[in-house]
Length: 350
Image (cartoon, rainbow, N blue to C red; front, side, top):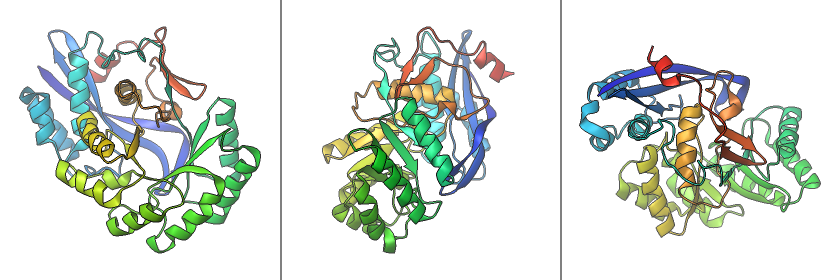
């Protein structure tokens, strides 16, 4: 078996704002396996400034992984514990290599185009007018669940935006999720949650920065809005530590981003613990290309989770790869009539 990796820069169609700043491009890496005239591909979706494996020597670890590919998926997964995005890439690459079709990792009703997955429409941060425009577009596209990034513009303006949405659309018409990306100070978080609760929100992701365990526990205990942990899960690899965290904080939801929490295997560890503690969950992509998004969507379809998932990010880039994934009517589907870019894997090898 031969393994190589390839760096690729994804270019945003429009600069996209989060509470950590504006993104114009995103770096990603592909692990490509070759054996007996077959190819396998997996995406190592690193998010600079957020991924726990955003460390010096990341590419050296990719080189090491390719040099030690003979160890196999399971041994590599254990050896790569500090590098969850590479764990995820290795998982995908082996699944891809061992499939009849390198892009068909989890054959299911979803990949037969019989069972689309409900997803939320993502609204990026920006000025009030821009956010209103995005919301209107998502509604026209058939989304019933919308997720807004908050925490970067003035809080009063964000409140005004939510109020204007609710003046037009009821909770039955639109489910609203907000994601603060840890933007609130612990001292102000409860007051802000009280204000936000007036607008019938489904949930808020990560209201305060990860690592404030006791403060987050108190918030989850007393919150007027269900809280979803996101960044809080990043960097915790030991199953016992995972269980301890969820037992202490007791959030209403957790959100799984396979690139950030150790791939499918790491995500399943979180899911099993959450379900044991009656904590609900959903899956979200982490701005991967269509290669990583395809893997996440196919895996998610096997979990039969009825909540809208966070898988609508494939259309963000000017130079993404043509694929059968299609977003329509607030869902993502796998169009059997669609196709992947010609010779995609071979071209990446060059």
